[in-house]
Length: 484
Image (tube, rainbow, N blue to C red; front, top):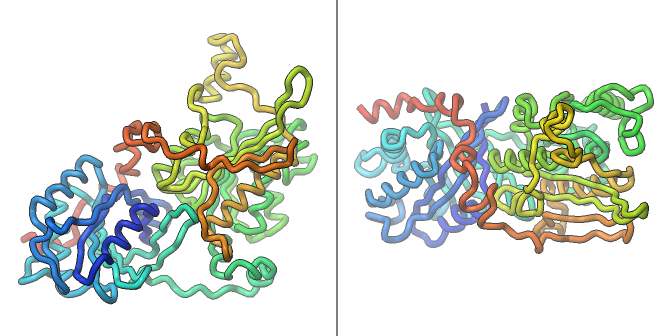
């Protein structure tokens, strides 16, 4: 299993810059959530801190000590947050490494191992990550204590910034240097003129989950196939004749088949070595949740706001960026009134989908709403799950193109495009204009998803608390020896 740390821009700045304030060693840390995918243990930073000068019992080059009451405050907040673990961070004025005093402390007081033992005893936490910040940018040492294995390296640190995701490889990580293959260089030769090869390879290796493979979803997939190799397609709908005016990747013989099967066949005809998982389920059914957890990006393009809401909530829980796509044509008195499409980008630590304008006044499970109508529980067809608005292929392709551009810039940072990304774009096909509404939708402190009093915050923040984090409860054998 690999170990990965996810952290937002705010907390990364606090730890990486706050711990480099002067030449003396300093201490800080973070509270952690945890979940597990097929191949990776993922640790998410929930909150962070830097110790004040008054917190130190001593502070110099070669060692620091923290007063008991300062540690008590840290432990108290961990309990309040119901954190799954703690990240213990400190600075070195030069190179990032684990020193003898880091491991064993001064006068054999225990160092990291002793802090680990005390933390586990005090809070019954399952996880401790220790991180050393060196003097130069991105000079980081990071490892995690695992049961019966001692310390294992953190392989990758994902920093989610407003300008995109930055991947930092700790100095102790066993990651091998990337060497591009000939087939990759030939396929992307024109792209590599403006995107560095290792960034293009990162885009190629992304795992993207698409929730809803109708008009906008299939349009996005049709563009993603040129850049990405791993796609998970989630949709239980079947292709109908009325879909064919805007559905990409199907032929007449596909009518009546599942949309995900039709798209999968088309993708494999285009590129046989693609890894495509076609899942005939609606989000958030269990199978879709499992593949979404493995994803680097989730693209949300269903025909209802109920699914959008839960996808935004899921992205917040697991620290996964969300790109939401939608389009529609509206008529008034028989005349064309509106042809618009929107794309919202939800980045960990930035305004969520609700802050960005997703309506939350009529969120009901669409299948439950349809069932109520069929059995006569509600008479008005407009109650609950309204019919999807009319749409057209050009509108869907326009919004899919904006979504793919945001995805590419978020993960690749094209040369000269390091500035912050827009989070809310609207394409108007009548006026042929794009509107950036990002500044009109800032973060809301009262937001029920990402605000200060968010609903079920402790449940979402802790991640997969049971049963997986219980497996990390027993401390390593060397820590037990320290305790004895």
